[in-house]
Image (cartoon, rainbow, N blue to C red; front, side, top):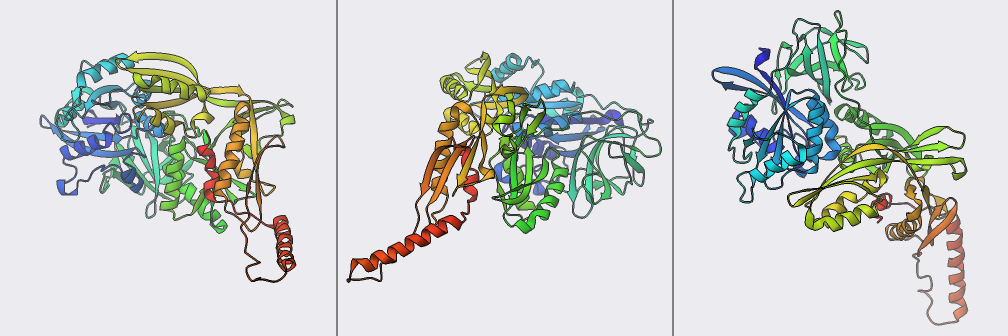
Length: 596
C-alpha cells in the first residue's frame, strides 16, 4: 500500500558516514545476510571502494516491520563531494524526506549547508542525525547548536547514532517511518514516472531507474519517453538491491524500480525525462531538476589514434551512467583526434578519466582543464569559448567574461589569516564572515579558473586539512585576460595554451616554461621552449642537446682531425634541428596544474 512506502535520501558532507549508515540500515532490515555484508555495500565501483568516497547515488528497496505492519523503505545513498552535487539534487527530487548526517567530532561543514539548501528547494522533510557518537571527542550537543545557528534548522527533534557500531540505528528507522510522509500520487491516473538515473548493462542494454508519481508501470506495457518521443515495450521490471535485483510484474505509484527496455543505444533514455503510457499519455511531464552544466573542460585523447571510435563509444555509454558529462570531437596538431569533454569539477574529471581507462580498457591523455569563457567580439557577436585555442585574435575581442563562483568555506579561526591570504591571491572578493563557536564561515566570490587548478590542495595544506569548501556558479564578469601560448621547437602546441589574468601572465609564462624544461626529454638537438603572449615571446628556456662522443675513437694525432669530426656533428645537429620533431609527454599537459 502507498501509505506504507517511505522514499528518503541520506545527505552529508564528505566522510561523515553516509555509506556506513546505509550499510547498517540494510543490515537492520535484514536485506542481506551477515556473511554477505561488506563495508560500503552501496558503493559498487572499484574506484569508490579504493578512494573511500561515493561517486554515484545508489538506491535500494528494503522491508521493515513496525507494530506488525510491513513498510517499504526506498533508501538513496548520495555522494558528499561538491563535484557530485548534481547526483544529490536528482536523488532529492525523487524523495519525500532526507536524513541530514552531521559528524559529532567535525560539526557542520560547507557541503552540509549546500545539501540542506537543495533539500529545502525540494520541500523535503529534513531529519537531523548526529553520527559517530561512540568517538571520545564526540560533542553532539555542540554540533546540534551549530546546525541551528549555521543553517537555521530546528534540531529539537534529532537522532544520536553510531553508524559504525549500530547504536541508535533501529530507533532512527522507526523515526523515519513516523516522520517522513508517504508519497503522494494517484494510481488511477495515466502512468507518470521520472527517470532519475540510468546505466548500460552488457546483457540487458540501457536501464532506467525510475520513480513512479502516478499510475503504474507493468511488464509488457508499451511506454513512451516524453522528450525523445520513443515508444517501447517494457521487457522486465526490477526492484534495486545491493547484491541481486529482484523482478516484479509492476512498479506502483510512489515506488522506485528499474525499467528494462532492451534499448541498445544510450541516447534514448535521458535522465530527467518522463515515462508515460503510449496509448494513454499523461498531460504534464515532470520538471524535477535542471540538466547539469559542465564548467570545467579538458581535451581527452587516445594514446593510440586508432582508438578514437572506441573512445566515442565509451563516452556514450558512460554518459548514460553520468549525465553531467558533455563531449564533442576536436582535433589537436599535437595529439591528433579526441574529445573536448565537460566536467563539473576537478575530482569529477579525475574519476571520469579513470573510469574510461578501467571500464573500457583505454590509454588516454588528458590536457589541462579550463573553464568556459564568454567573449564579446568587436562585431557585437557573443561566443562561448571552451578551449583556449578557440579564442579569437586580440584585435577581434571587445571583452572577455569569466565565470565567478560563490565559495563557502568553514575553517577553524586559528587558520583565518592563511585562508584570507590564499583567497586574496586567487582574486577573491569577501561577501560574508560569520563566527560559529570557534570556527569561521566565509563567503567569497572568486573567478572559477582560480579554483579549478590547485585551490583545494592549497586550502587543505594551509589549514592542516580542517577547512571544508563548497561552491556554486553565480555569473560571468568582465576579466582582463590573455591567451598564453607555448612553442616547443618553434611550433605552437595548441593543447598547452591557457587563458591567464593579464597581471599574472609574465610570472605564469616563466614558471610554465621552467617546468616544461624539466618534463620534455633531451633530444639529439637543442629544443627551445617559449611562452608567447599575443605573438610576443615573454619567456624562454632551452633543453640542452644530448650527443654522442664522436671524438672517442681519436687518440693522439693532429687536433684538426677531431675538429673535423665535431664540425660534421654540428652540421648534422643543425639539419636535425630544422626537421626534428619533439614528443611532448603526458606530464607536460598537466604541468599547468602546478603553476602558482
